[in-house]
Image 1 (tube, one colour):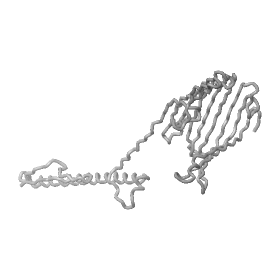
Image 2 (cartoon, rainbow, N blue to C red):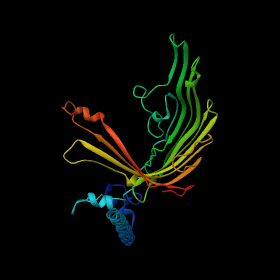
Image 3 (cartoon, one colour):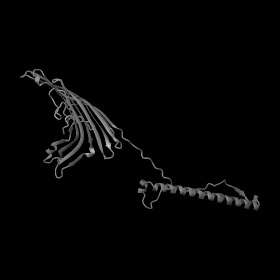
Length: 332
C-alpha cells in the first residue's frame, strides 16, 4: 500500500504545488500500527505549524498593504486623484522624484556701430540695424566756398550681457557696455565751423526679482567724459537710477486707441564742466548733483491696422517730471 503526501502553499496570491517539505513514499506494510500512529501525529503537527506560518505571512502582507495605502492617502497630489470608493493599488507606493531643471543662462557679446548711444540697449536686444540710425562718415567739397569738410559722427560700443533664464532665481542678470563717441567736422577754410568732440563712457545695469512685492528692481548706472578739442574743455556726466517695475502702470484710455505707461523711479545725476564762464543750469555753478524721484508718462496710440486713423500709431510722446534737490545750491 502506497501513500503520497504533499502540501499546497499560497503566498502573496501566488499558488504553488511545491511541497513544504520533501515528498515521502511510505510502505505501510513495513510499519507497526503504533509506528503508523506516531507518523500520523507528526504529519498533523507539521500541517499545523505550516498553517500557522501561512497565517503570519498573510498578516504581514496585509499590514504592509494597509501602510502603503495610508501613506498614499496622506499625499495631497495622490489623494486628490482618487475618488471615493475607488480601488487602491495593492502593494507599496514608490514616489518618483521630479527632476529639477534649470535653464542655462543667456550670454551675449556684440560690437555695434551706431550714430549715438540711444540705439544700444543692455538687457533687451539692440535696435535692429534697419531701424537704427547708422554712423555717418562723409567727405564734402564746396567748390563755391572752396571748402572741404570731413565729417565723422559715430558711436562704437561693445555690449555684454548675462541673463539668468531661471525665474526661480532672484538674480536676473547684468549688462555692461563701454563705448566711444566721435563727433568731428573739420573744414579746410571755415575753421569757425569746426567741431571735434570725443566721448568715452560706459553704461551698465543689474536686475533682481523682488520676491516680496512680485516685481523687479533694476539698478542702472552710466558715466561719460566728453572732451572738446576745439574749445579745450571737458564735460563730465554720471547717473545712477533705481527702477522698481512693480510701481509701473500700463493701461489704455477707455473708449479710445490711446495707451500710456507710467514709470516712476529714483535718480541721482552729477554734471561738471571746466569751461570758463560756463555753469550748469540746475546749480548755477560748474558742478551739479541732483537727487530725487522722477516720473515719466509715455503716451501712444494703437489703432486697428487698415483703419482711417492708422497714422496715429506713429504718434507718441513723453512727459517727465522731477522732484529733485540740487545738493550744491540746495535748490528744489
